[in-house]
Image (cartoon, rainbow, N blue to C red; front, side):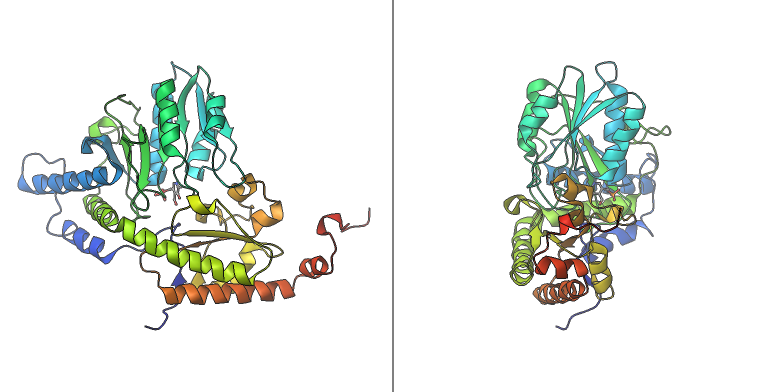
Length: 408
Ligand SMILES: Cc1ncc(COP(=O)(O)O)c(C=O)c1O
């Protein structure tokens, strides 16, 4: 089969909807259009039944004991906001301290900034150079005022997977609520809220081949029962935690996507890891001064993140963007030209933080696409470096850091 352009290798920003998901959703836009809260006629019962079935599929995917522990939201961002603000509001009499990390996604970081303005104290635990959080650093940051620990399961830029079970254990030991932003992990790698001691978990459909605009927050009901203050007032849907008419077609799609992900996870993960490793080998064996970001053995199978010295990530994307969709830094920050705060947090120089490229593969990525993207990336990097005076100087043995650019 020939290549089809543009090639999509930016699947950690979003994934294409699986055709089986679209098919499952379609009747819920047309003949099955009932309101799931309409308790007194068959249209409502049908819609409610479909929502319950989807809820059960998502609960199974994350190991939740009871589907009622899932609250539907508009996506990962809303789930995270609801978890963090909901706990802060509900437990503020108990304490005002929260522990998180420097590599969380913007939905968390910006929520914490708001909570800080409201008087909460937030400790941002640093990350090790390989992208893994040292659980002992979290332990050291805890105080008797800590009400919440929030650590992302897998990073959206470098794919690094945290030791969530160890953090869950620590949280239980100290009696502190534990939230994880598992937006990138759910459906890709095994996630089990019971075995891992997770109290709150945020996830989204559009990263597991489901539709955009729907996500969920898992809220533990037993051992301990976690309570959160709602953000929205209204009809009291989702057991009072999130008012608003449920988007039934999207929820049905989310359920189908969860079901498929669970079935194919092991096989798909192995296939994508193999393709990703091939892409990594092709690039790293041909391009000098290219640095892999994130610990290789604790990464999402579809993720590859490389910093290329002497070139701007944005220039690489421009060189490729008519034919290949990639990302520099996270998709959510690529509208600004700030260097990636995640790569910078690993201890990389500002130059290397500016030069990171994320390749993220997906269910429909082919071996042919991987070969093509690998070769094209190599060509573009070589061309950009040929035009780079810095690269020329470095090749002549000049230490770039010692250059004085401007007369005083
Ligand atoms: C780690 C992480 N958290 C949260 C989000 C936000 O999720 P959503 O786009 O569903 O609001 C994303 C989105 O890419 C993400 O990667």
